[in-house]
Amino acid sequence: MTNITVLGMGSFGTALANVLAENGSNVLMWGKSEQSVNDLNTKHRNTKYLKDIDLEPSIKATSNLDEAVRHADVYVVALPTKAIRQVLTDVNDKLDSKKTFIHVAKGIENDTFKRVSEMIEETISPEYFEGVGVLSGPSHAEEVVVKQPTTVAASSKQHRISQLIQDLFMNEYLRVYTNDDLVGVELGGALKNIIALASGIVSGIGYGDNAKAALMTRGLAEISRLGEKLGADPMTFLGLGGIGDLIVTCTSTHSRNYTLGYKLGQGLTLEEALNEMNMVVEGVYTTNSVYNLALREDVEMPITEALYRVLFEDAPVKDSVKALMGRTKKSE
Image 1 (cartoon, helix red, strand yellow):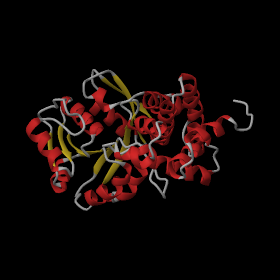
Image 2: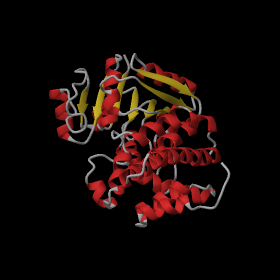
Image 3: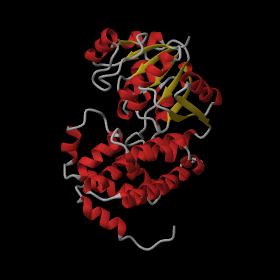
Image 4: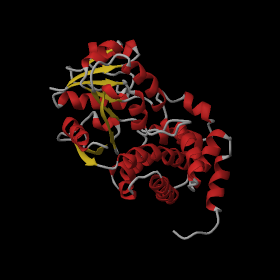
């Protein structure tokens, strides 16, 4: 039995904790909300995010980080990207032996433009760092937790960690493939949120399937351009961590990025739309990061640029769509 601490009590962290417990791991969840901790320990539910779902009764929760750190051989990092450095700095201060980290975050750090695995590797001291991997792909928590068929990708620079992730999470309804392209899997998971925001906007305006298909296709093209420039294998973006995640996030109302974009397309301001969400919307922060990263790397990303101007410069949504459609003629 593997002792696992899931850092974060959001919807996806909870769904994965349920998978791990069902697969036989000894799972402890850590979160700051005493209400969420108490709900899980007494009702075996996460009423804030997955309110009507009964979770595996073996899962325990704590708000005590010392207890959470002591419990684990493996840590699953299910936190918003912007919180990871601070929480793991606190975790690092409490470690006394080497540990393995698995993250499920889909973002890029503002200012540094670091991928999440790079953030973790920088934050955990070498004497306590066994390695890091990512689990990513088309996987809404709301479907995973009710055991609907789902396939995802596990990746690490160390193949044994990819295999460990596969062994820990794979079961009859969650199929896990290994992929050696850590850079590509992480970037695919982060960058698709930008396109999902844009897809929500397109739907909110009232445009149809033609527009969404064009957006997803050309969005994949600019994801691949930046990914290749940063060392990813372009073929990764044709797999689960790329187009698979892109499709599900751009087309589903389960997607918080799509939902926020839809609200923007309906005429809400960014502040108004965010106030209506009860979860972190990674795509907003990722758009800021990737817009500036693309400038630094001299990579053309017209959809990302247009979305950046809508989010952070108050550019009118329909004018931005017209500007994209009116760009200079190109070949595909």
